[in-house]
Length: 198
Image 1 (cartoon, rainbow, N blue to C red):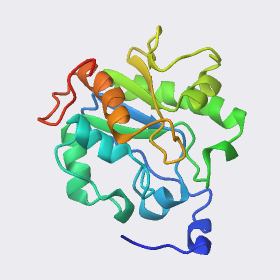
Image 2 (cartoon, helix red, strand yellow):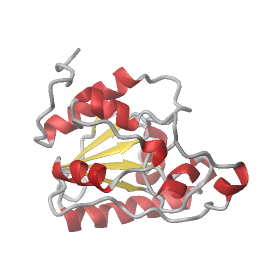
Image 3 (cartoon, one colour):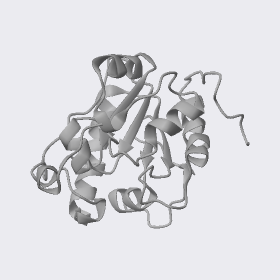
Image 4 (tube, helix red, strand yellow):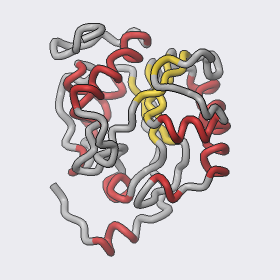
């Protein structure tokens, strides 16, 4: 795993991390914005304590582990795309914490996401973070799970944020939350996938 000094990580503030999108995105995961470790490694959800990839593996959405802290390999990216997965963010610029974003940036991110979904036509969109979703789409009462409205023709879900700062969740609870939109997107869960309602 690479080690970055605080100064090295700070040098990636406001950097952009490109979306991970293939020609056949069935399930589009949406982060809030890139963290500094993500910007440094050019890998979404890359912080060493982020539970995104361990949860995908436990859910059976991914069949091979990803060492996100070291940065995705080309093979990792190919496997993810081959499963019909894509990753984007509401806000493109890297910050140390998501709460550094303005409400305006999140609202603009919601509009940008809608346009991306219209262009790429995933079956399901899963926004990882209820607070950011509420701000981006102006729905203060929204709850986790399947939303009552679609987004540009895609089924819309809000799932828990996998950040290590979200102490309410475990890898197991995240795996269960992520498996539901994956099933809705028609992604077959591997042998490790949790059973519905477990």
